[in-house]
Image (cartoon, rainbow, N blue to C red; front, side):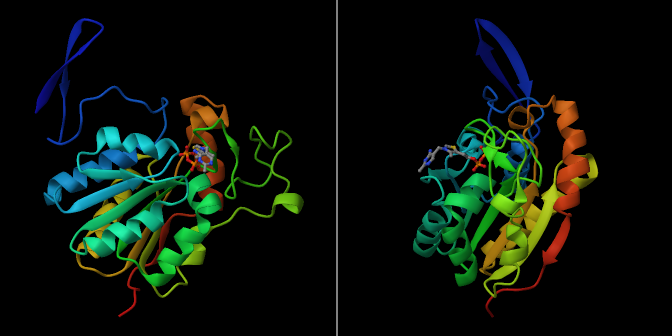
Amino acid sequence: MSDTIIKDGQEFEVVWKKPNLQAKDFHYCPGCAHGTLEKLIQEVIDEKQIEEKIIGIAPVGCAVFAYDYINCDMQEAAHGRACALATGISRVLPDHCVFTIQGDGDLASIGLAETLHACNRGENIVIFFYNNAIYGMTGGQMAPTTLPGQITSSSPFGRNVKESGMPMKVADIVKDFDGTCYVTRQAANNAVNTRKLKKAIEKAIDNSLNKRGTSFVEIVGNCPSGWKLTPVDSYTWWEENMLKYYPLGDLKTDGGIK
Ligand SMILES: Cc1ncc(C[n+]2csc(CCOP(=O)(O)OP(=O)(O)O)c2C)c(N)n1
């Protein structure tokens, strides 16, 4: 399928793999994996033909651009409140899959309480947690997930773990809640991992459609602009630092309140 878009008076033909992927100007910075996550979510929605059965929620942070690319009903949440909003929508529309896309500043800092309680209650929602170890949208400040020694705009000498503690591994916390049925940590840094991430998205959405409780999919991501690196260097930093501290794989596959 292809679309014609007009930009600056010029016509461009854009070829799309999936019918619902939106032909829009792209907001993400070059090399950022946020867009990969959203493309995969859209592919799964299309393949399962569930656009009428799925509702997305994005709070502030770079996840907010998802509205522009994913073609299903979506609702914006205040910073940190995506899991609370998802709880309400999922309870009112129990036959729908309700998912959130949240950054680490959003989920692990201002929204930590909402996230932990939603997971503990086993709300029938899917949480996509894009962890790039900083507050990306606001200029790369330190988050609870920032790596030891990592330089950010608010920790110019590197994260001092004596002052700020060690990075918080939220997936390791929520895997111990009875309410979570599926907890996994994935990445989109290469083709193999991107395929695994898509499988995780499929599994999480199936869990929700089968009312199995909370699925928590952490995407260990990158942020070239916030990390002040070129896209290529950001991949090296991602692989050498992020993936070591946040190892990939399933943490829990068959939980949930039975
Ligand atoms: C209540 C409130 N506090 C602060 C902000 C400013 N703010 C907007 S986006 C953002 C950071 C988002 O970072 P993160 O959740 O890690 O997502 P990323 O952009 O890195 O994907 C902040 C602090 C806000 N919009 N609302």
